[in-house]
Length: 111
Image (cartoon, rainbow, N blue to C red; front, side, top):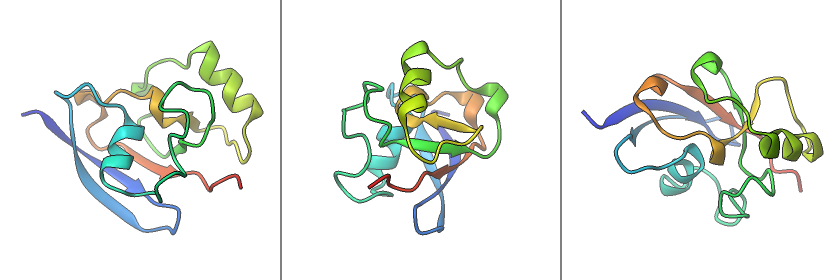
């Protein structure tokens, strides 16, 4: 089985339980974009390089299963708006089998 179930709450508060492929080397930001859960041009503006924080999400569960935050991600979140203790950049979260059942909320646009 190459797909896992992830629940993503969009910026309007609507929850979407989607199938995320683990065999395509995608990250969470790319999955959000592929399902069009955020308006075009409002998420992943830097292309997933941890340079803009437009893909910031709040991790609602499974934080212990996520990869450790890189220095670049930590630095970017230090400069971002509306950061919470459970904030992560979705471009830095690879889709793996360990994330089955992950629940995230897309942070509000900072504009």
